[in-house]
Length: 60
Image 1 (spheres, rainbow, N blue to C red):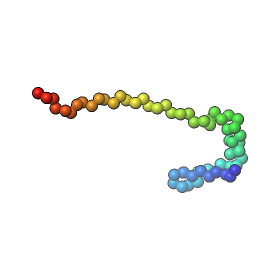
Image 2: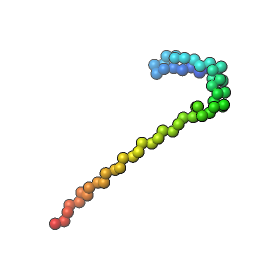
Image 3: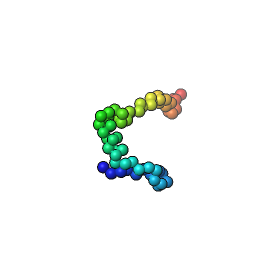
Image 4: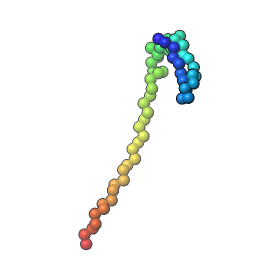
């Protein structure tokens, strides 16, 4: 495992995550995987689509 370099949007180096830190994180993830699982977002309820009015001319 190699160190990880984190850059911001401008391309400047923000931080370096060491191999030791990454190893500790991997060990914690194996022991407690629920802490790293991303929850699924609930879908927004769909709004009802209004019925279109008929555009046909009425016969007289």
